[in-house]
Image (cartoon, rainbow, N blue to C red; front, side):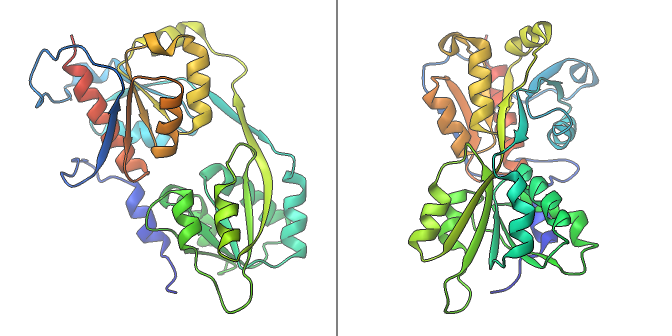
Length: 306
């Protein structure tokens, strides 16, 4: 198995200075209820004049301090954002075990499926004395969390695998088995993550230890003035089912909210549909570039609606 280059992964998640949506990029748009009649042609574009930059058009909802990459990517299209953090991360029940498990046990793979899981893992890994580990990541965004460490870890940490599609189920189906013995996998995860990954790996013969190292919860306080502004903007972005749930709880009646929701990937979009949201956009392949293209698609549609 050839190692996965972090530089090649990183290139997937960072759009160039001017992002032009690729005609071959597969975007999925699900509109569950009829939209209002468009007032202009489908070729309507998003304005990028200086006057349009002053007013926000997109709501970003990750934890405060973690929206920068998306904000910067959209700024390259002349799109300003309103920050409304919806969730916060908290310690999971197994967090205190993680550093001792890393120090006392040897694993063939450490499976990391989100940036937050990567950050939590790195803290515990350093506390455990930085043992040599082999990492499998779900995609480029998660791989980027390890970029600084890779430059200074003297090859103690090896980001060696990413699946063909940045989805947990695909990772579980493609993770290489090493040697003839049973491969041991450590899976630090959110308490709210499903059992799909460990079940799929176990079915393939891996020995999996899952540790619930963090969880997500709604933020403790939301400024009502900012919330009202967010409700009126064309597009709200969400990066997890937890964020979808938090947004639905804030708007109270999702069936009456007629703006668009741009999801980071298919799993989050499926959660949005379950909550009854009407205009849901997501990229076929999760990642920053596809997410930006989905947001642009949502904005183009909203620009046609009177």
